[in-house]
Length: 186
Image (tube, rainbow, N blue to C red):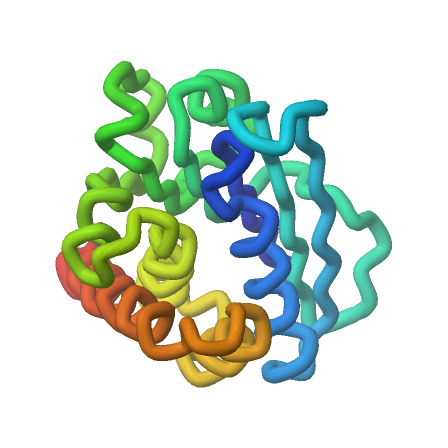
């Protein structure tokens, strides 16, 4: 089993942190092999950002995603640049408010779940910056790439002290949304 997950957006959206948390959940709490790689522009906020996580039940011989099984797009630029790198049938999460121009023809080959993630995060926690944690909840419940318990533990390991409750609220809302996508056959 080899699963490749792509996260992309712009700096400041938590793209890198989300990928690190997912890799940790797989490696530390699921006893799987995991490799996380990242690339980002020279700007710390606003520049293009991409991270990949490869998860496997056997040693990973190549650390980069070749044809992602799952992808997350937090910005129009990221969507335009990386959408066509995903494999046919991939599960794709799109931040619908930040990706208004979509390739509906290409998306027919994919399973796409488009949501106003930033708005939902803000509504759930009062903070838009919890959008990446909310998205991890959606990804986990929808794809079952790692268990909910593993991702929850990894989130608690990664978030700043004093923010655990708010981040768990975002994660659990993501679980609800991901479960809905799974039961609806998306």
